[in-house]
Length: 87
Image 1 (tube, rainbow, N blue to C red):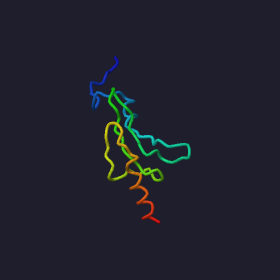
Image 2 (image 1 turned 30 degrees about the horizontal axis):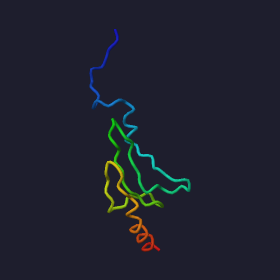
Image 3 (image 1 turned 135 degrees about the vertical axis):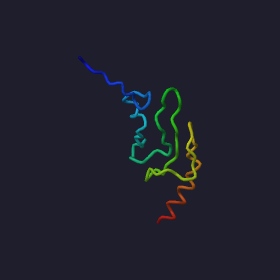
Image 4 (image 1 turned 60 degrees about the horizontal axis):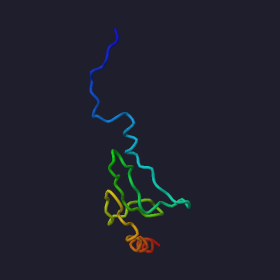
């Protein structure tokens, strides 16, 4: 006789749903990071978005993480100041 395990999954997600948690960076044609990076939308909800430095891909500390558009262009001046401070 065939045995079926009655051990429950750790939650109700499907086996491939964890793939949506993986973030693949969004880059432009020159290979630089787009200022706005977002997680994928899931179940009709927008994914979280945040602002990154175009050369490093690191999050901009003062920029918020929001569901929608964090308006990353307002942080360009801050990025320019960071770049000149590192020279």
